[in-house]
Length: 161
Image (cartoon, rainbow, N blue to C red; front, top):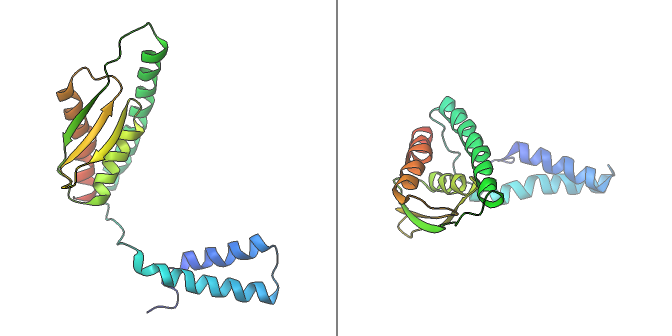
C-alpha cells in the first residue's frame, strides 16, 4: 500500500487545511500532514478505474454538440412557454439503451436532462431502458431516434461501452 495513493489530493488537503486555518504553526502542519495521508488512504479503496476515452476528438465534438443542443432547446422551450398559446403535449417515452457501463448510462441520462424540454426520469433495473419525460412530445419515435443517434451512439464510440 502506498503512502500517498492520491498525491494530488494529499497536496490539496494539506494546502487547504493550512489556508482554512490561516496558520502554519507546528500543530496545524502536523494535522495537515495527518489528514493529507489518512483521508486519501482511507478513500483510495472506494475509487473506480478512470474511464478510458478511446476517441478524444469525438468527445470534444460531442461536448460542443451538446452545448449547441442546450442553446437550441433553450430557445425552443422559451418559445413554447412565452410564445403564442399552444397546447403542450407532455409525455413519457421509454428509450431502449444498449450501453454496458454505468458511466455511459449516467452520461446519457445526464445529457438528456441537461437538454431543456427533456428529463431522464429513471433507468430500468436491467439497465436496458431509459425513461424520459418530454415537455412537448409530438413524435415518440423521432425523440427515441434522436436520443439514440445524437447521444447514445457517440457515447458508445467515445468510451467503447
